[in-house]
Amino acid sequence: MRRRLACLTAAVVLPLSACASESTAPDTETTGPATTGTVTDATASAVSEVNGVPHVIGTVASGLDTPWGIAFLPTGSALVTERNSGRIVEITDGEVREVGRVGETLAQGESGLLGIAVSPTFDTDRFVYLYVTTGSDNRVLRAVLDGTTLAEPEVILDGIPSARIHDGGRMTFGPDGMLYVATGEAGRRELAQDPNSLGGKILRITSDGEPAPGNPDPASPAYSLGHRNVQGLSFDDRGRLWASEFGQNDVDELNLVTAGANYGWPVVEGAGGSDEFVDPVLTWPVSQASPSGLAWFDGSLWMAGLRGERLWRIDVQDTAATATDFFVGEYGRLRIVVAAPDGSLWLTTSNRDGRGSPAGDDDRILRIEIS
Image (cartoon, rainbow, N blue to C red):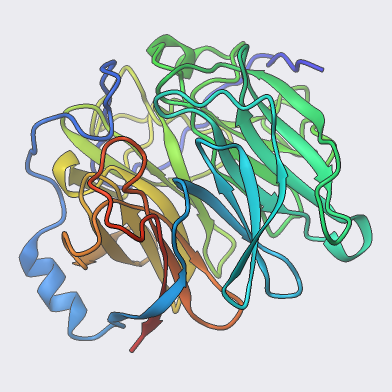
């Protein structure tokens, strides 16, 4: 069921602020010199005086193998994917139970079992969506959770370029009921600008994997293009879509995503300052971020940093933002941050991903309270 993109044109939108980046080296989460970005200690100090401060108040689960995605069920239980094992586990009141495995998972480098999303109509359809790397591609799967186990998944979208690096993988349902899927350019940077490739895009599809109504090109699942490797997606309380994205050698970025917009990779690394490409709202030196998870919570965006080993709180206005970092170096690499139904944040470590230094109880899910 491979979907090919028809021509996607870039909408001209107002640029917002700073820059983007990439590397073809396998270790893109850990390489690249730090450069001057738009986030400063002075800014962080000023912002932290007036907005919420996170505190770790407990451990939800431990001993996980590179948790990559978290999605909550209507019951409050959480489904968690493990990148390397291909397992999906359910966490209920601190108990971890395997509900399924994706046997076709190819875990090498940054690939494997990645994102997960729960249907907004789960109570009636029982659908769970998964993003997985196989021997031939990345693909979106759909499976029924019957209460105890996941049924055999079906492929609803395939043909997404895959590699050891830049596989994207984050998924979230939007306020419009459509599924938004982040893809990477699989180390082939030209794919990000190629309208006939599913790589280097943010896709918007129906629950059946078809191009969503209202897409820039009705025949295409692509919603935006010019991305290197988006691994964080989140909607704010105004229904705006935000994306966190790996840079190359210079900066990582936070983008405000709009339909049909072109975010410049690989033509532009950083702020291009032209009407052709959209500049990021915020950038960071790669040593401070390598951003993965992104969540809207308590009136701010929260972003987990892998190489940066920290959690960022990002306070956004209309077309600008300021950022404050927390837990710098305390828990190692941080991959996922999600808003939990109980009013807390969940934050995962990623120290068993081959690039960290795991503690005895890694990988963990930490429970965070904001005060």
